[in-house]
Image (cartoon, rainbow, N blue to C red; front, top):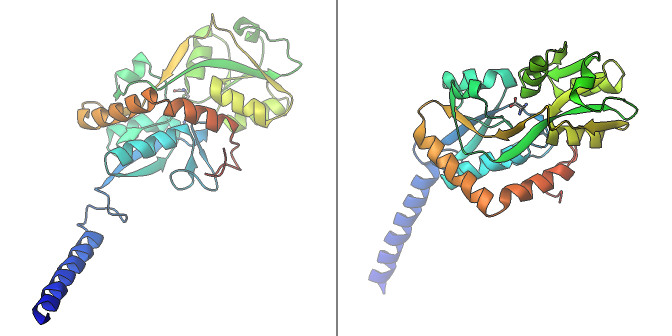
Length: 267
Ligand code: ARG
């Protein structure tokens, strides 16, 4: 009996020690005991893909992309960290190692493909025009003599440039929309899902499409050229989330969430 107690206490002590060791972990482990982290860069000015909310899926960051980033990290037993920066800075940040991956509703383009490697695509989008409800703009060429606003560095800017029209660019979608709402410009060219959100959140606006002028765009996650290990991990999760309908589910969920009331309680 005595011997049994002694063995038992040894076992308990050993177990306790093991627990202590795991809890402390090595220096590369994160606070919750995961094996390191993946640093995702984004520009959280692009609902429903990424925006700042009172309670997001990763800290204050919420949206479709943030949920995907979280899943990628989880599938690899890592913690997802978010570096919020200007959209224009993302590819540079990848190059100099400040971030491991860029997830930002980023359209795959030939120009960007020269600088970074892209994952499998996970979302189809296109540029649309946001105008006042009373606007007579009905197709892209109607913008020719209008005051056009785009967001700096977005593919919408490339499209308008290609059309050869003069435009003004802003750093944030919300700033562009305010220009439109205040009657200081006639049209904002931006990605479809984000446009839907802005039109839902602001009265008196409508969306005009021009599917002959604006081509389909596909979003993907970017990594530094040659980072095959991370790209494989990302692709595995994207494939899974596409196959099991999770990405469609997220798209539907976040189409309804508004920037300020976003939380896990939202449907
Ligand atoms: N899809 C557009 C592009 O790739 C806009 C992306 C903007 N994303 C953001 N997180 N601000 O240029």
